[in-house]
Length: 217
Image (cartoon, rainbow, N blue to C red; front, side):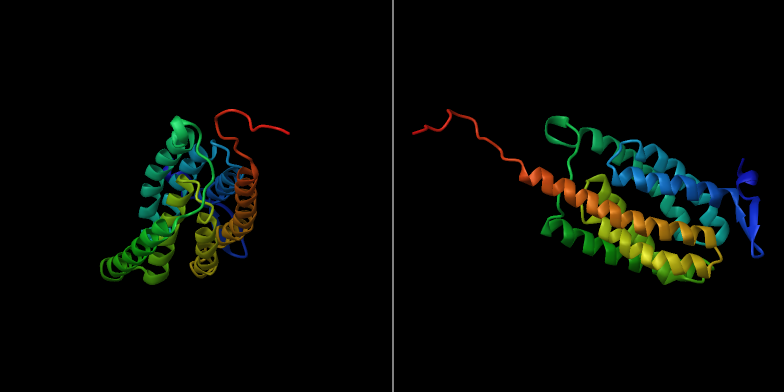
């Protein structure tokens, strides 16, 4: 199976595209579209997607991105559970905003992850893009964590990551994956708008407190 995934599916302009990259493209687009629609099936589709990308990134020498996929599987399982039972009284989770405290925690984690991965890739691997690889890895982890919590601002983290990923993958010759992340960028904008609309709709609901009805004249 692994050998088949790393074989070339087709060639465009002298650049071959493997089955892992092609299937990663298809499952990736479907996954982000499902996340934007808050469909629970996004999690199993996403897990399949990251396993395919793990194969692709390792063969391309993007070691941090390859290792990141293992964490994505764990986050995918957590997100799957949390979306189903993370709301009040173990109900389905609703979209919410990122608090100041959460932003502070994400910022600290982002700096530590980027610095640590950069040093590791620079010293222990033959990566030609250690800083970019580390930065996008850190952003992707933070964005995925935000989506497991249905934090609307997680889409902004994905947008920033995609803006770095697109030229990074083009530089590494992964043209189809670069095109995939261009599609991701558009889907992230749509997802941001959809989650914001959901948040506004939830805020517009008038909650009537318990107790007797107010007196009328």
